[in-house]
Amino acid sequence: MSDVLDLACELISRPSVTPDDAGCQSLVAARLERAGFKIESLRHGEVDNLWATHGSGGPVLALLGHTDVVPPGPMDAWTSDPFTPTVRDGVLHGRGAADMKGSVAAFVVALERFVAAHPDHPGTIALLLTSDEEGDAIDGVRRVAATFRERGTRIDWCITGEPSSTERLGDLLRVGRRGSLSATLTVRGVQGHVAYPHKARNPIHLAAPALAELVARAWDEGYESFPPTSLQVSNIHAGTGANNVIPGELHVLFNLRYNPHWDAAKLEAEIAALLGRHGLDHTLRWHRSGEPFHCPEGPLRAAAREVLAGFTGVAPEESTGGGTSDARFIAPLGAQCIEVGPVNASIHQVDEHVRVADLEALPDLYLALIERLLS
Image (cartoon, rainbow, N blue to C red):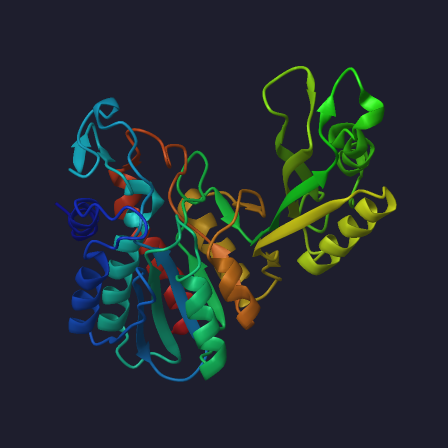
């Protein structure tokens, strides 16, 4: 069994369902400490965060990952126990194999190899891990980034190990992510009998024109490699369950995925003004998940493009698609951020898996990126 496969199996065998780290970071910390890394634990609430560094000064290259996983779902739906790593036909199965204990294992092996070959490397190489990526993402990298900002900790380049590849390892380079902004809209009316509408105010009817305007609006035409901003209504609820009662309140959930044309404050103001024009008696609660970020052309993006092309034989697709990642908290520190990881076809699914050949290639891929930037 290879070093990276052995470590990935050790990590998968720890049932670290978010936010429980289940000892994963202690395992990683012990290995990196033996390799000469300085280890700092940043625990907040129930969340474990690990910051491991080697070297000093700039530039600072951070590898970013998470040790928590989503719940496995029905255990009897799995071909084998989700927390008993199992190799079948050249494929490693287990919760977190692709998202993202395989990448974490590859990070560790690549870091060990790098400092062994380059003990006096320029700058700083670092690893940041959290157990709060799959959950609320409050006490994880978001909180660590605030600490870094307060104490002036610098990060120049960040490589996130999220499973970004689509068909084969290295076929996609994530160069940014859209922002995510969620809203809970409550529109108040007056409850009454459907036979006497003049004695009631139906909040569904009142809100319908405003909602139609929201969903019909073209927010922008995109931004560089970003798609246009999108607003999606995810839930509408009103009524008592009886068909002869006009409801007193309407509740609407919607989310915006937005490109760098916008920030959360501008979108919130724009939507508040739209609802105000419709004269609704309403309240609006916002949740800001993260602002958009984009890696400009520069040493990090160029190095990743070359390394991935060398691994696959063709230039990678450079994309800003998908959901969000913890890089959204690192980018505001002034860091350039990319995401490179294994194939994402099975993430969060029953029988999550990664090809052993891909897993064993990952440390070489990460090592090549590190060496391009810090040696």
